[in-house]
Length: 84
Image (cartoon, rainbow, N blue to C red):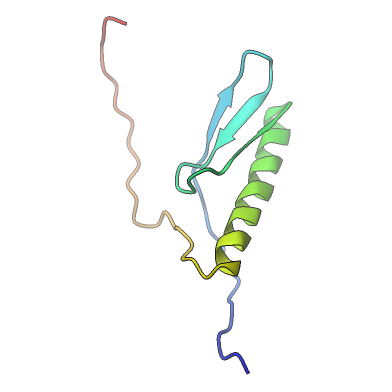
């Protein structure tokens, strides 16, 4: 008998949405390496991102790998001036 009980938790992940030249949107989940998806609209891209994150987490859990969380991260934006 397995004594390990999986608890349902609410996890939050920051995403980056990048508009592409073809009019689609790419979503990247920095805390989950390799987790990215896209959609034809921002709304579709967000829905696809949710599905991609859920599948990524399920895959990690099935392999017994710790699920990354962002609770200890600090987010900041830095503005620089550059001749670019």
